[in-house]
Length: 155
Image (cartoon, rainbow, N blue to C red; front, side, top):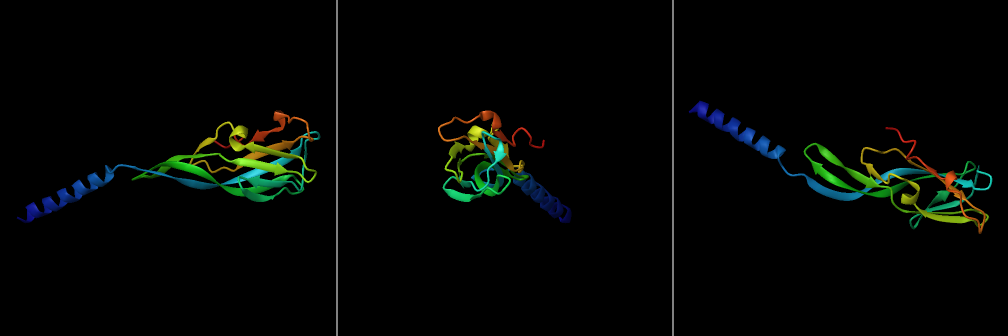
């Protein structure tokens, strides 16, 4: 009788453990915080522009410093699955960026236009590095001066 009880308890525990491991995964969506580093350049001289105001979406995120840099943390859409072994999924580099220089030059651009691989793994938490050239009023911009951290990201 004692042997039967022990075998029954072990079998029930084993059955519960296997059942728990076979539970379905859950889908989730939300947002993840990621650091954005922006450099604003004068397109004619390729020199940094200080004092430019930067807006991400509807939010004012700062003003460029003497090196033409502005840094902030943005929230980006994300989603994936959650299961026994943690969360997996992707986040998207998404949003509208607007820059206005003190001399009146401005530029508005979607982030996915600047970055080739806008879909990234949740494990990829490297900063988004961007460079935006501002052309003189009435002039078109030179895309060769734009760069993103996509090509220089660590593997």
